[in-house]
Amino acid sequence: MSNNSTVNFSLNDEQKMIQQLARDFARNEMAPAAEHYDQTHEYPWPIIKKAQELGFTTLNVPEEYGGLGLSLFEECMVSEELAWGCSGMSTAMGVNGLAILPVLIAGNEEQKKAYCGRLADGQMASYCLTEPEAGSDVAGIKTTARKDGDHYVLNGSKTFITGATVANFFTVFAYTDIEQRYNGMSCFVVDRDWEGVSVGKPFNKMGQHASDTAEVIFDNVKVPASHLLGEEGKGFLIAMKVFDRSRPPTSAGAVGVAQRALDEAIRYAKERVVKGQPIWKHQVIGHMVADMAMEVEAARLLVWKSAWAVDAGENNTLSSAFGKAYAADKAMKIATDAVQVFGGYGYMSEYPVEKLMRDAKIYQIYEGTSQIQREIIVRELFRK
Image 1: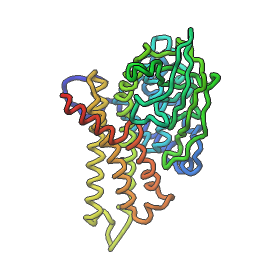
Image 2 (image 1 turned 30 degrees about the vertical axis):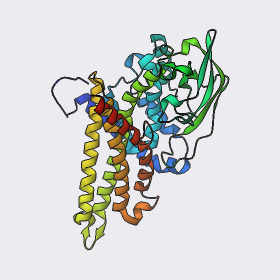
Image 3 (image 1 turned 90 degrees about the vertical axis):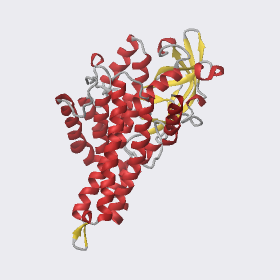
Image 4 (image 1 turned 90 degrees about the horizontal axis):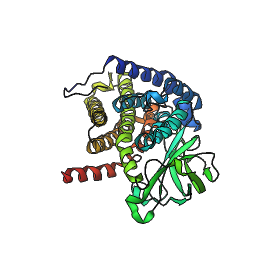
């Protein structure tokens, strides 16, 4: 994506093509299968395999390593479309993009070639930061990596790890010097089949049933020193840089859920007749849908701006917090409003808005809660 001083909200021909490809996939492959995977909690391998063929699991992997090499703006555009089809499946596809970010940010050429290449060849990866006692407080992790000759000994556990049960490798954050706190954290690439690595059973979740989430345990895992990403003590900085790049696509997923909820509400409001009129003609419903539409558009533009800033080489810490908090909160509100438009039918699982409401909630929690985003916003506003 080209960036210049001219403000432009239109997509170029290549971007329109990518957007349409994702839109068609969401509508033709994902949406028809969404109910099945939501009910069975099965991992959607058939959909994932098709997504891999189209490059949807390697959106941010540079072309020289076998990926699509999209800009962050374009990645957000695709993420929104895929989440429209099913946010659980979209999360299952997008986890590779999150897991590979530490490698792209801090890895050397050999590491980038090896691990980006593995994703391009169809492997999956997971990002291991969150722990049982450390979610929003990144510095509160307890996992350690003790240097022992030409390797590190990794010990600890990670929880709520998306894609853990199918991952072939993990990017893992651990303290190499816990006394140094922020300056003592490091990041490693750890293979799933190494001795001492174990993955728990998938958790039962409120929503996003097509995306697995599990605990990962590291018990005296020998990690070669060559698997350290960047320098010792730079892990916290890497994690913060990851957030700036990962939050916009996550926020775009929230926009996709919100757009789907809006679309379903409009469709139903045309069909449902009360007192001789479609319910959208009753102001109480019509105005509710109007508010939903305004909020979707506002969320989309905030997310687009936060992604554009990264592509333009600008700091996006504040804009990504704006986008993440607003898109997440509005996705939850809009999904809830869609259920209200449907009335009693909206509460029934055979109608799509019930699933959308359950799926939407996680956006207010993962990749930094809505409360944490507000903390970031306050910090950034008063830092200036």
